[in-house]
Amino acid sequence: MRPLVAKVFLAAFLSLIFIAPAYCQMDFQDSKSGVTLSLPAGWTWNNLINDRDEQTSFVVFRDAGSGIELKLYVHILVPPEAITPAEKMNRRLLKQAEAKVRQRTREGYENYRLRESSLALHTINGRTGLTWVADYTDHGRNMIEYFARVRSENTNALFFERMAPERLEDFKAKVDPIIDTLQIP
Image (cartoon, rainbow, N blue to C red; front, side, top):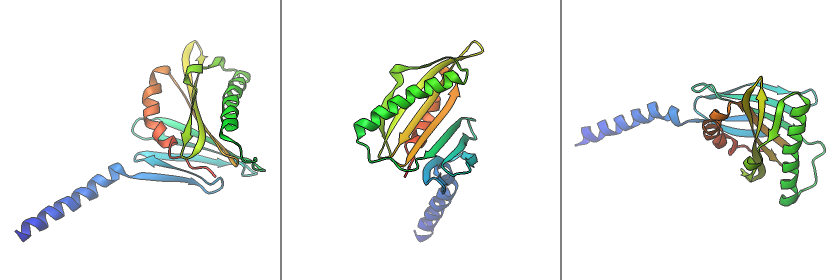
């Protein structure tokens, strides 16, 4: 009986060694901004860029299996804002979504418009957040841009990516769990 128990234990232990990497998560941390998040196995990041004054950073996350990319722009607010009630922060987030439309229009995006039905306020790891979709045209082709903005009195974090509309649901299924792990100061 004892040899059988030892064999079962050894088999279980070896199984864990080979299976564990498939369920591992990696933590991303930007020591300059204090931003962290968890990435599933197969995801990497590159191009972490901090500006000269170290108040903004930009990073690209990529899933090696699917090729999906997710960009993150972070701006540290100096000086920090006063503590803001949730209702006021929600209004601020909605105004920032409208401001993004004006920015993209100035940048030359054709027919860039906010998809009103996509605006969704929710909490992301204890912070006020907003996700939304914008539609636009690129050389006659319908495209979308997906956004998730998370705010605090100290930090403004914005995830975004552009894609064909038919990719949106698969994209959200892969990146929303990552966005939900975001921690900002």
